[in-house]
Length: 412
Image (cartoon, rainbow, N blue to C red; front, side):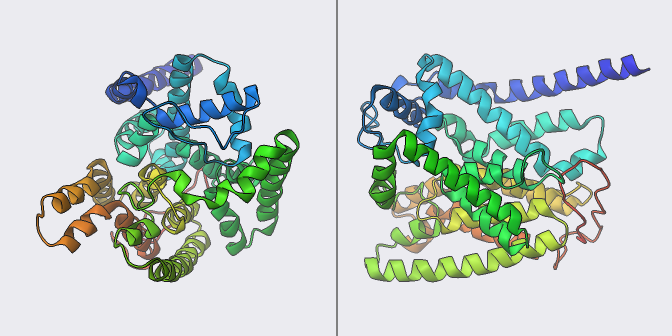
């Protein structure tokens, strides 16, 4: 009997892998075989940073090859981690990085939809394969493959650190390391604090500071260059008022108001979003719904950051999992499907078309252009109100699995 179960489990996992692999193959092959100068351009930045370290060149002065001409924009600790990419051929780096993207996506799916997966054992691996395939085609996730981005890996680090009931390391360390790689995950230090987990917040802060100080010892000149110059030059990140910047600040910059007015309104909006968002995240945690708390915190990070490219919305996987719950509520599933479809469609570029061809009022074009950022605001409110104002009358019920993420009970 045990051998049969083992064989059946192996077959199920194989089928799940095949489903995901076949479904994402067109996406992967498209972006890994397109024009060489358009292929995984952000991965090229990371790898070029590693090459700069190896040859002793200033990390924050180089630009990638034309036509991209992109600088390295991450903290110096990130460039240390990029050195191994410089030691392998470019083709190997592309395929290896793409594989890591899907490993990270699988982990995030596993945590995000834990309550649903707990109900359908032992068929959960097949559902994971289906969900990975679906999530991969949402624009924030397919841009991970298109550009060779690191966002989904940072999401995976934060989720693996925060969501489990227990961790084999001091909780908070992965959040701290993710913050040392890219500053935005530092928002989870605040999440730890507002939920009364001071020890975890200290672990995260210590890990981030330790990684940063270690980098100062290894690369003192580059570290000083980043923390005292490059960090404050937002133009290094690209056009802040471009459509791909879907943060609150990006949306305001596209209104072309005076800089002082834009900055003032941005700060007010950041304060409002942070207040409401962290209040909602804390409420979710008190409900025992850690996944919803993580998803809300991720949305806060996207909205309040000065620059949030579309691929920064990799938190969408967490949002979908929080909405679906254990999958008993049909209205919740329908809502999640609608959100998924919205982010599959390239809605912001419809706004560009409207503006370019003078279709409809100009403000309508701007709203459509800001669709993903405005969608993040709406999702934050939905996740805030999802328990207070049920979208389905049937309770999702408690999570009874012993080793699953702490997702608790939702009365919705």
